[in-house]
Image (cartoon, rainbow, N blue to C red; front, side):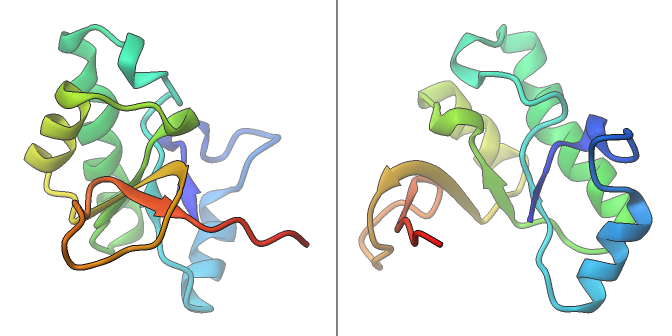
Length: 116
């Protein structure tokens, strides 16, 4: 599940206890930034905060390594990729269609839409 760290425990979002329950059922925690900012429009000084702080806090709160990042709106650029890598994420998901393969960049993974 991709989490916006600043929203945890808000009345219209998941609580920390709900997230822990999902963890126990095998759900992986992924970061979706601190505030759900559009990263291609975020000033460089705030980029690290949005990407790295959410990882650090999610790991502290839920005692699990957060290895996956999900780009809000699927938007990212060279500076975003650099910050995601520097922050220690192993994978990152965009919103573009695509299959993962060994020759691709693990910080630019596409997705396959599966309708309900």
